[in-house]
Length: 260
Image 1: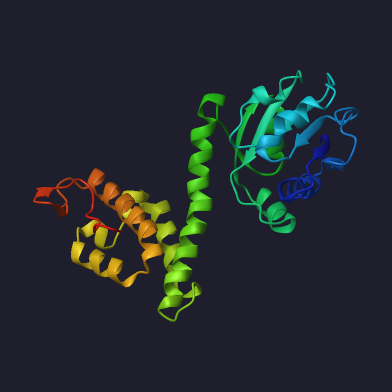
Image 2 (image 1 turned 180 degrees about the horizontal axis):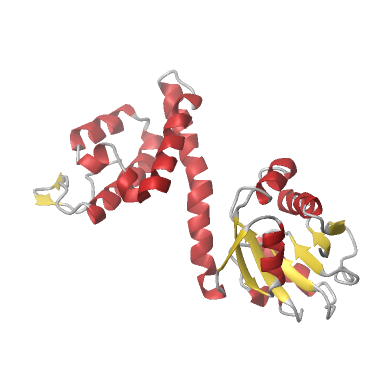
């Protein structure tokens, strides 16, 4: 087991501190922005930078390097170059939301995937938490992070739209959550193309137009974007699906009424 100090007392830092301690590591505390961080790498095996992505480079530069300490950041979008002053560098990104310390710590120890790079201590930490490490090289970090944001943040934002539309029909978002869970389970079993159902997959343009007419104008751009994504998935995997006519010709994407 390792001795670990963290910088960043936010949700990620506190979640990681609790999870590492539960896994048997010796956690030497969490430093915040008002603490003296210059010697944070001294006397520990691992220093974890759990700061926002845009602060990692500055925080790393403010810590004096220690030859025996591995400096690890948790930022999904960043490579190892932001840890430049330090001789031993690694990244460890947990592929799971960390909404608060208690839920986060539980999830970190629940067998999740971790994106790792750099020093082997990142793999070691992931394994100690019962996780599944996989390597993401620096050149692929931005694309990896974009996929992660779509998988979590965008899904949550879509459910926010579900809530608004449902409330206009006198319902709550809870009525639709089992539907969302089932769809995600179908993706796990069948893949996105096999799980796709609904009017965009069928080319049922009259139903899609009825939906648009029922929606508040401010909800239509988000709805149209979702229809376009569903249509692209269906078209890519089911050749020959009907497309909507636009101005007398065949359009590749679904028709969107003017002014929407």
